[in-house]
Amino acid sequence: MFPWIIFITVITLILGYWKLGKNNLKIRFILGSIIAIIFSIIRYDVGYDYFQYYNKILNNTYDYELISSKIAFLGYYFRYPPLAISLFGLISYILIFNTIYKFSINPIFSLFIFICLLYLPFLTTIRQALAVSISFYSFRFILKKQLLYTIIFTIIAIFVHSSAIFTLFIYIIYNYIKPKYTIYILLGAVILYPLIFIAFAEIGFYARIASKFQDADITELGDGGGGNKIKWFYFILCVITIITVRIKKIKINNNLLSILIFGCIFPFLLGAHYGQRVGQYFNIYYLFVIPIIIKPFNKLIKFSTTFIFSLYFIILLNSGSSQYRKPYVPYKTLYELYDVNNPKFRN
Image (tube, rainbow, N blue to C red; front, side, top):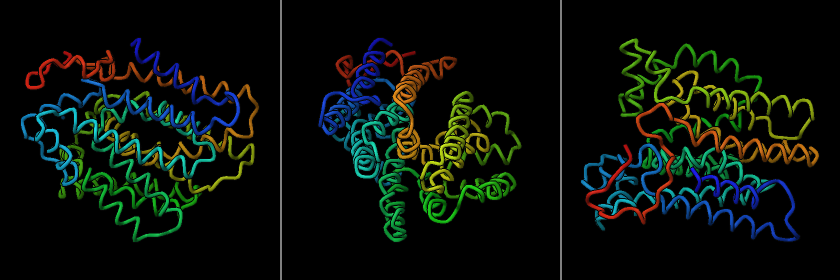
């Protein structure tokens, strides 16, 4: 736990919503980005799925999508699985950091929000994290209603992880669906979502979800992998965001709020585990929204917001504590990997 406490303390000091000297915003952004990247790519056995990726790449037994398979092959070819895992992360961060630097009104605080909300989950989802990053990168095309380019990047992301099909939903939501219409769409989703995901299963998309629907076993689905408290966090965060926008009359593209609404609903439709994975495609837009809604407030509120998100990161470290192996603690590095062919993973 101690390395993580040092990590989030340093990140908070560098990226928190306060001034540190003059004209050093770019330096702070670059420094925060480098720390986040290094801490991720040198990790070992951190992230719930890390050991699964490692063993599959080591033994050449992976069955991933086209692009993901090519990245995994590099780890197998060089007989060093961490190479592939690190590449998944490195590419993800480059895409995300480039996007927030280009489009956020406060890239530093957007980077801070990313680290607090999604950095740890990305250490687990790995392939999907890269797909989410590609989807997020395509925001530049969604913003300009460039459907062709959005489709191209969606296809690229699907070759990383099949769930990236949701990028097209984001295109539709951002350009055409205002918050007041989301209630009708969500009601329809409640009725149709079993049929939708059974259809997805036929093309290999989250087949376990569909099988549970077919077997009428949604109890396991609801608990799938834990995270029930986290889904309520995102629900409350979404409610607070919308209320703040309305009360303070903040100028913001309301369709961004529509994206966030969909993001907080998926865990209730699909269960906490799978719903949060799908929700990442939508929740990542908090990186744009939170800096916008926090801007009109005084220094005390901004400081408090920084502290709250830092605290959330620390709480998230203990997620999955009831499982047989905690996903994020203890933090270990590749320097503790003494035998690549016979790795020792946490129990």
